[in-house]
Image (tube, rainbow, N blue to C red; front, side, top):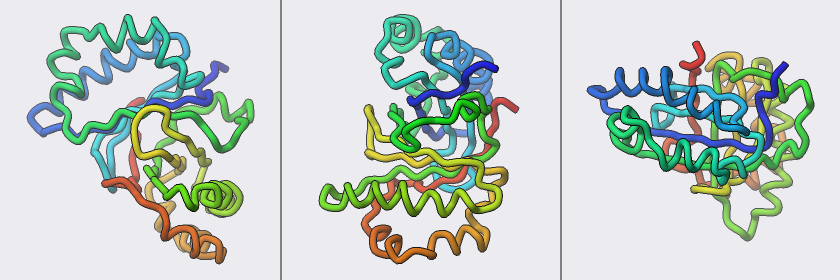
Length: 222
């Protein structure tokens, strides 16, 4: 099977006014994603719409690593060479609350080979997070050893990864992959969140970006 994920991630969030939505979605699905997937190092992609949080639309690109975004193949054929359609209806033209962040994976440090071939999850929950430098080391230790492992045992949670931003803000991103949109509303999720005293001490120090955490449903591929 083809490799579908590496250690890099490109995430693009935006809101689109209703009058542009149909044409914007058609351009994204029929032209833009396929153009990016022809760039070496772009492994897979999906589009999502927010059920909770925001901005409304998310394009998620799995990269071999974040340095793909510095290659001539990306810069010369995509970023600085917009097609006529992109120039007219692309995110930078009609989008609001636009966020474009590039990330490097920090948890897990090594992805199991089987997980490197999985498709885009049907639902995501994401947190865009900052934390003060005074507690950052403890925050990362807590997140990796207590917080995520507890949630991975919740029925319907397919996996979780953490990333640090190499372009954009806030600094940290957590991506949970869900079978359905109600996973984080379950009693099991609530118990996992409240099960460790360390969580009650560290969690109040997290600063979520506006619209975070958000729950998203995949709209492409169908």
